[in-house]
Image (cartoon, rainbow over all chains, first blue to last red; front, side):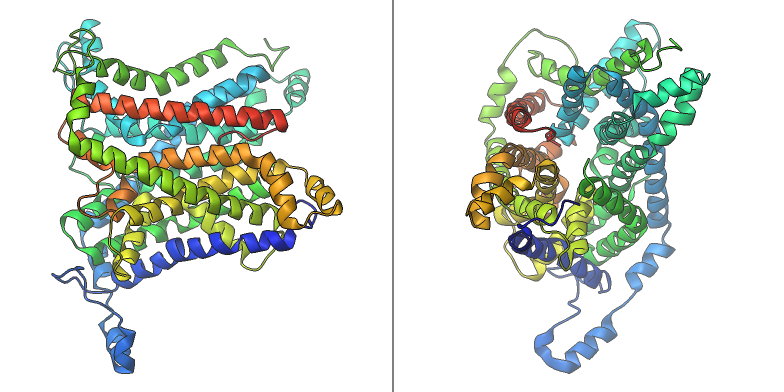
Length: 304
Length: 271
């Protein structure tokens, strides 16, 4: 923490506007999600029975509390569709995060060993795709993976396969899309910790007789664990709720929870069930979110 | 090898080269095929600009692009003001009441699944009976992107020497004056980078915009998404290439800004 600056008081005043904004547009909306997840579905506009109407006085409030129901949550537990969606989402996110770690680590490691001049260039090159549209990058893969797309053409030309393979609408395509989209999120925190490692540590390990591989496993890797944690959380949490990638690249027989929520909301117009789905998803993500919050705070506030 | 453990090995080079190729190849292929004369997306029929012409005759697509640019510029501007204020409060405000909640609210949207953010904002807009369209999307995007702006600016602020501000105050500036004439010029490049990041994130967003927009005001990603679901079309390649070109311009702007920032001090990358 920087020493108490004379800016302290005015800086606190600066918090007022963003504080109110985030409270109103980030925190309060969750209360509405919670409220509507407890109400009944209705064929109306908006499609739920109002739970609360203060204007109608005390009796109305009592009636409203009586009308609160856990039906939507009971539905989530009893219907396989939802349970399977949650399980699939957590599995896909865990597997993707593991692949991202294996793919991202060598790249981040290579970056950290570049001459300093080239490190900033490499970092820029990794950041640029993050700025480029998610949707467009997934679309680029549809181009390549489709039945008569470039991948099949190359495989056919090289006589690796005799007839075109099906790539689109498979889990492999989805994992490819996820790894492709989230790779910068994994590389950057890894690179941040790896580039700060003192090279003298590795020299010491080598002087003491460690092989490069031993030095890596017993010195570099343990010291890079904060970066591993940050990268893993930065990927895992949003992947659990991912919608676009599984929707465009995976098949339609097994849905991730983001797709189920989307379907309930936009196709079935069942807002209460969609809200209940979101509440449970948020609940599942609470522990990783709190962990991520702590890491982020430490990183930003203790200086980089 | 074993005696010089810190040298760049051929393994390192290979990992880097493959990694970067993996990140860039699909986009390069997309751009090349947008100039393909053949209607079949997969057969090369020579160079042509016809799909770009097609885009400029597609009124619905142009309307969506215009909507996206307006939403992007408006929300990025709001997000930059709010995000910079938030960064100042966090970097210079020491411990104030509710600080933990404040920083939590600013960090959570960075990883929060978009379906949750989108749904919750929509339910708020419906509850207060707001007409959905341009402004609701602007509010939603501002909420998301101000958090990114605040991270970028906060990184720069914490690398800045607070004694500069103290010197200005000792010389008779009031805090507002010291901020405007000392701090702000020093963090301006990262504020600019924050604006551009906010703009591209807004231009990119499909999920939150889908929830918060109303009928008749689709953004570009919403239009592109509904076309992509129907299959690959050469016109979409052309539109995507135009978006990539626009974003590339923005990135060049941001990296120039951070170059200036580097010249004035250390650290402060676009992210």
